[in-house]
Length: 163
Image 1 (cartoon, helix red, strand yellow):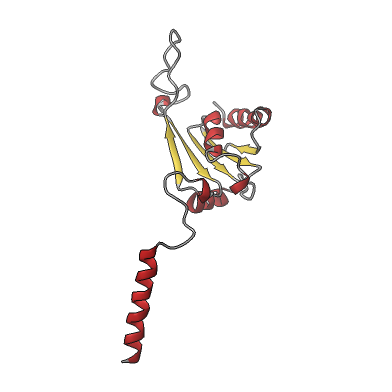
Image 2 (tube, helix red, strand yellow):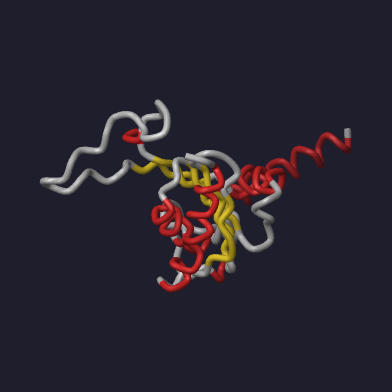
């Protein structure tokens, strides 16, 4: 398939996603089976924690990177920066199985030997919102053991400086 057709297909997804209520600004196809989705919202303005992952699942490119409105999806250097600084949260998904009675998805891709049944990756390179993390509690104050460690270090430095 020609890369231009994939770019057109992804560009056609923007109004579809908007009709579904998603705030998508642009979709760029830099290379075969890859997509960069630029959102209109970022950080605390995202309505849900997994908002970028929801949109990435709807795109279903082999590799999808979701960025905020401050990142130009046509500037791959900016996209790489967002992935490195903000994008520690990437998720691998398996493609859905064919429904009962439908033909099975072929093991090899339609356009080349890239296997289509391997799944796809979504990289959430939007601004994280720590208050929405559910894997660990948000930290605003240091725990007591850190306060005690700092006090010990200050006492130790104070003794060394006077010798």
